[in-house]
Amino acid sequence: MASFSPLVLSITATSFATFQCLFHFVSPCISARFCPGYRRLSPKHTVEWNSRTVSTFHALIVGLFCLYILLFDDAVNEDPVWGDPSLVKINVSITCGYLLSDMLLICYYWRAIGDKFFVIHHLAALYACYYVLVSSLLTQSRMCRQDGEGTRAKGEQPCSLMGLVRMDNKVLVRDEIVWFHFTFSIPNMCRPIFGTL
Image (cartoon, rainbow, N blue to C red; front, side):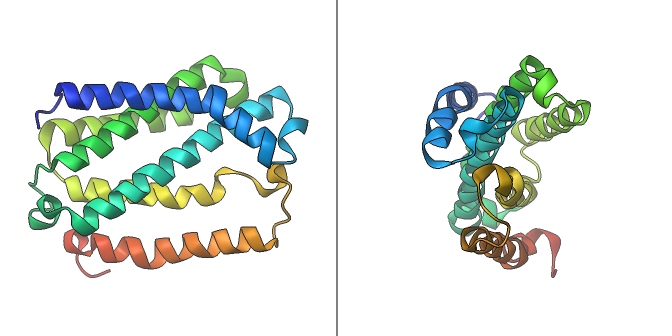
């Protein structure tokens, strides 16, 4: 797959549009229906909530995709440093679309969610994605990094905004799943590239 093939560009554009739709339409509808505290949020907190919902969705999608790639994609497992697997580029393209979408939202809603460190973080992440797409180097380490995104879902939605007490069973189960994933799953999958952890 070429670095900036039509497939990579179309996946990035589709990802961008999808995350914009999630922010503007899907998150408000679902959150209003299932989260008791959502309707009581101020406009600023509503923007932050929807942004975190989209971020959580992105983290779950790329995290699951990374697990699949690291477990079942022979191109990644055969040559973790120099490999040129197409699935990695597709996953990185999804992340590029998300990062561009989030950058647009950060700029547009600067008073609610604007932060220069988020902008710097997103630019650095876009550079890392560009590096993987252009050089095809270190694709497995990028997958380990993106799989770590899945652990971010733990902190994306503050419990108080969802109407949950910190010791609620739902919160505890979620935290334990994230802890298990971070402690056992990621180190085992990244072992071929980083050695024994």
